Amino acid sequence: MAGKYTAREKLHKDQQRRLVDIPKQMAKRIGSGKMLIPRPLDIDDMVRKVPKGKLTTIGRIRTRLAAKHGANLTCPLCTGIFLRLTAEASEEDQLAGRKKFTAYWRVVRDDGSLIDRFPDGVEGHAVRLEAEGHKVLPGKGKKLPKVDGLEDKLATL
Image (cartoon, rainbow, N blue to C red; front, top):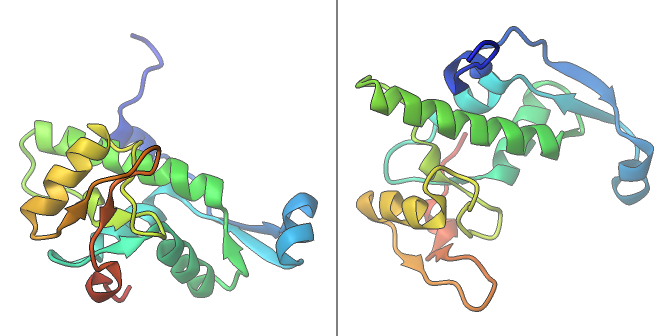
C-alpha cells in the first residue's frame, strides 16, 4: 500500500513542538496562557521514564511536559493521539523482536482507570499491568477497570 506508514515511522515523523495561545473555548474554562503542542517523541520519552512496578497518568505526563517547556498546559488531544501512537509503535517493536520497547501499559487515566484505546483494549492493558504486580479492579457498569492503590504506585517523572 503506497502512502501507508508504520506507527514507528509516524512516531519519528519530523515535527516541531510548539507553544500556542490556549484556544478561546478552552480559555473560558481554564483561563488564558500558552498550550504546548508536543511532538510524538515527547510522549514516548515520558512513558519510557516510568520504571517497572510504577505507573503514571496521562495528566501527570501533560503537566510535566507543560512545566518543562514553559506552558500552562499540554494539548490533551495531541497527548492522547501520541500516547496511542506510542503504544502501537511499541507493539510493532515487540513483534519485530526488538529487545527495547516502550512499556506504554504503565500509563493509566487520571482516575486510575485503564485505557481502552490501547492495543488489545482494557483486557490487554489489565494483563500487562497484572504481570508487573498491579491489582486491577473490575469495572462496574460502563466504568472501566481501575488500578487498585494508584497513589502508592505513581512514578516521579
